[in-house]
Image (cartoon, rainbow, N blue to C red):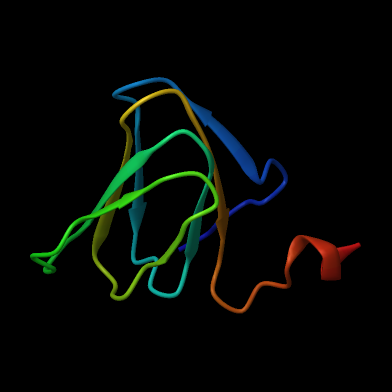
Length: 86
């Protein structure tokens, strides 16, 4: 997966979807609002509220959908945190 973190914070409208392919280890953080996350091959879905984090557990397709207006940040596995990158 190629993840461009030039814009690490994504604003999502209710119902808007982000699709990640082969993103194992990617950290998804809900900064504001609520999002629903489902991973291909995993029967358990996740709902994140503000400041909650989910780490993608497997490759395949991962879908992140905003349940309400939301801001989401993504960090690829092994990428430095935003504070470390400065």
